Length: 188
Image (cartoon, rainbow, N blue to C red; front, side, top):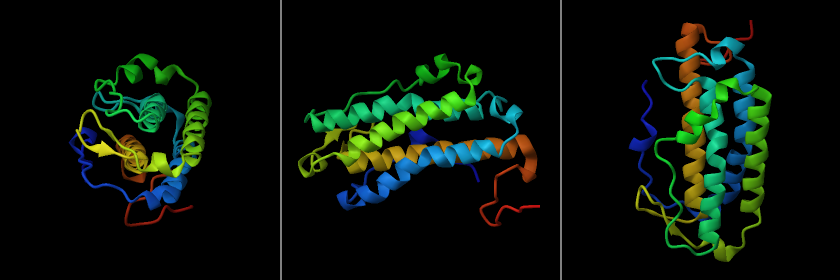
């Protein structure tokens, strides 16, 4: 099944602020899920380009590239700004970063460190900030912290799914560490 492109996604539903504890678990768990996924892959897959798209390692690096944006948007909400800061829709930072030349442990460590800083900031929010919102610049939708970080968690999962898709393409139907959605991974 082909994945829906990120910019075709819509986020029109507001997330219940009581979802924040679950979102914190999901967000804090992304680095471990990414590390586990990549550890199971042959090293040559990490930087192999498929059909001119980002490599597995570039998808992983992209998650770290956007972490300052997520934290910045949270600070925009906390400061009461009417509109959240925009992003570069061309993802120039990921293109320029040359993630394929970065050692994977450094890439993963940087993402883990940045994500934990974001999670700690979210954990420290007071009730007043949880009810504030700012307008998402591309979607023109108001987002409270819970809405924003549901968006972030979905973005994480989008790239984890893309990494799995690339691994399937690189390894055929018997990809290392990638279970079919209908069958569990075998341990033979």
